[in-house]
Length: 347
Image 1 (tube, helix red, strand yellow):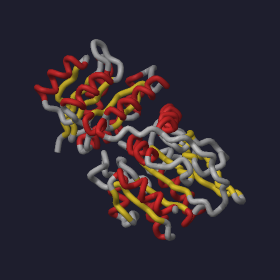
Image 2 (cartoon, helix red, strand yellow):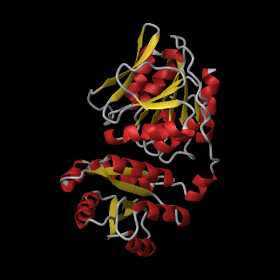
Image 3 (tube, rainbow, N blue to C red):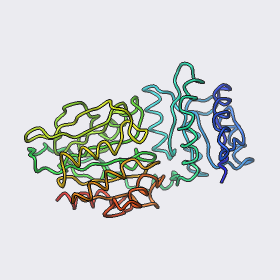
Image 4 (tube, helix red, strand yellow):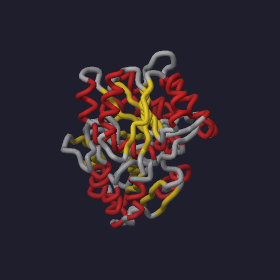
């Protein structure tokens, strides 16, 4: 199946580079380009693309406004193209909340070389987006608004404390939010590896801290792991868990990527198998690829509880699907049931 793509960007250079990169894949057809959302609106009706690539900052109508209108009136897979800056990170996370499937980043300088460096990833993300299940704005707004309850003081930790380990990729920023909003303030510690660029992980952690009853932070090396806290892997490093006496600690590693990712879910789960064992429960949420499946299987083999998000609620059923196929998932559940199941196991 050929994926038909419409490229929306005010830069003629970016439109040209993206068209060239995507057209190198015989499974992708660039059916058109648009310099702004108003032109794009007409071309969507005319060309019926499968996927849009959408710049965040454009004339006449900004990308977020266009995305919000699109997801309300005609939900379809959208891949955001955002600047690798702090402001770009915040806007991109807002776009994911509005229903964008995924994003790619472009540098502020030498955009052509920067995009070409990620050419293969870009093509993979476009094809994955074509198979994704975009959530319309009406579905997003139908979720009950949840105000984070007051945070309690964490209980004292010991080596018998449970740890919840979660891995995710495409669609994961919103799936993780749903799981964290289902957690009480005194829940066991949660460690998370989400495939995300280095510039984006700290703003993502800050956003999760605002909606969660637990305290959420970007993990740092040798940071003690405490109940009531959530630790998100930095986009530049693997997150590992280590035990030191009565403590579990976050350890960061700049070792080479595993499964083409750093941070890698398999890397984190491997450390969980070694140092936490059956005191852990593991979950794989929506995501492209197979990262995490092998080591989730090891977790299950040693007797830890494991769960994978089901296909119907996953934006992309790559990672959880791989976990299910290899027998790593003890249970396969819709996203809305995962927090409750994790809590049941750790109790």
